[in-house]
Length: 57
Image (spheres, rainbow, N blue to C red):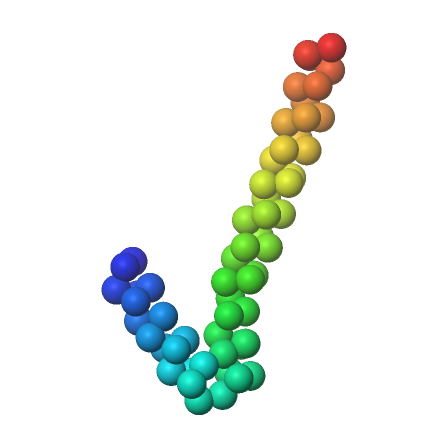
């Protein structure tokens, strides 16, 4: 996992030095991953509140 991350960073730096639009495209997968993680976290918290809030009352 770590070598892939290092390769990703070097590739991103290379793209950033070459082309600004390419660097923006290189950053997109991380944004998608963050959006998916945040969406799952919100769904889980809503489900937990929906199931456990009446029990607490």
